[in-house]
Image (cartoon, rainbow, N blue to C red; front, side):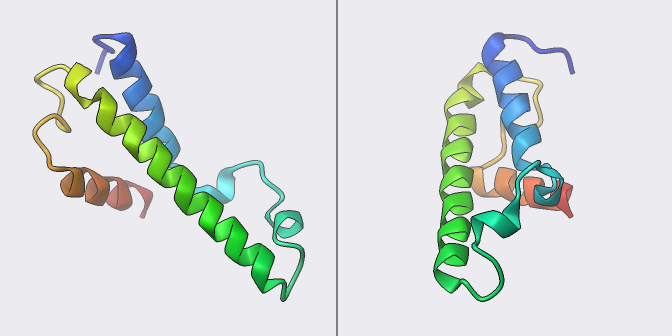
Length: 90
């Protein structure tokens, strides 16, 4: 679908980020979690990913009103949109 506006393009980019495979990101997970058995660092890393997911999800929600009426996400509830993203990841 052709981007109808800059906000529409931003929405699609955010959607792409949220539906990408986390393992494909260029992040040294092992270094960030401090190695095997470092439960505190592992908890921080998990919390950071959840926080960023929420931030990006909120950014997407703010751009919904700028989507064209024909966009499939326009009429979905936030829960339906999140579920659709989970299905795209799987």
